[in-house]
Image (tube, rainbow, N blue to C red):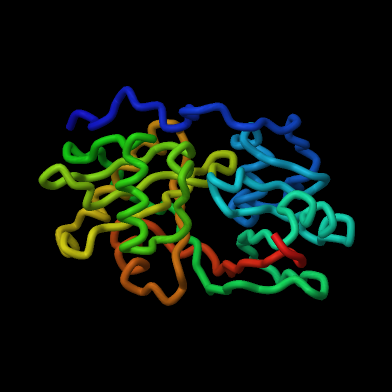
Amino acid sequence: MTPAHPALDPHAPTSPVATSPAPDRSEVRSEIHPLDRPTRAALTGPQAGIAERRGRVLRFPADVSPWLALPDEPNGQDWADLAELVGAGGEFALAATTEVVPPEGWAETFRVPGVQLVDDGVQAAYDEEAVPLGPADVPEMLDLVARTRPGPFLERTVELGGYVGVRRGGALVAMAGERLRPTGYAEISGVCTDPAYRGQGLAGRLVLAVSAGIRDRGEVPFLHTGAENTGAIRLYEQLGFRLRREVAFFGLRVPGDA
C-alpha cells in the first residue's frame, strides 16, 4: 500500500525552538535502559535540541509538553534548579518508576498509575485514510483532545512530529502522533477518536500507521497509558504491543505565586 505521507518528515520542527547545550552522555548510565527513563533519555539524546535545561534538570518547552526530567536521586540543588526553570507557582509533570519525594511545600496536583508497552510484533502499516497533521490543524486537534482527553496535548505538541489523522466530512475525527524519542525508540501518543466515530477501528489503524513511520526510521514503537484504561491496554496488546513495566504519572506545583 502506498504510504499516506511518504514525504512527511515527522521530526523537523515547523518553527524555531530554543536549543540547549550538547547532551552530556555521562548522565545516562549505560546499565539503565532508555525506556526506564524515557523523558531523560529523550532530552539528553535525540531531542536534546529542544530541551530547556538548568543544572541536571531538563524539560520540554512549556507549550510543547509538560514533561520534565529529574536525575535519579535529586538533591537540594536539583530542586532549586527545577524551581528556577519552571518558576514560582509553575506546574509540571513527571513519569517515574521509583518514588520521588519533593521538598516540603511542593503540592502534588495529580497522580495516575500507568503502564508502558513496547512493540513485540506489531503489524505496522501505513493507512490510505491517514493524512499528516501540522500547525494549521492545531485548533481542530486541541478541540478533539478537549473532548476525548487522551493526555497532554498543547499548542506546539504537534512539533514533536509524526501526527496523522482521519477526517470525515472534512472534520478531524481521530488522530495519533509521536512524543518522546529516547535513542532507538519513539513513543506513540495523542491517540484519540471522536466519541461519535468510536468502534470503527480508527485508533488502531492510526497506531499502526504511526508505528510504520517509526519502524521505517529503524526505531521501535512504544507507548504509555493509564493502568486502569483496560480497553486501551487490550487494544494495544491485540495490535502486538506487550506490557513492559508499571510507571507513575504525577504532577507537582512549585511553591509560590505564579
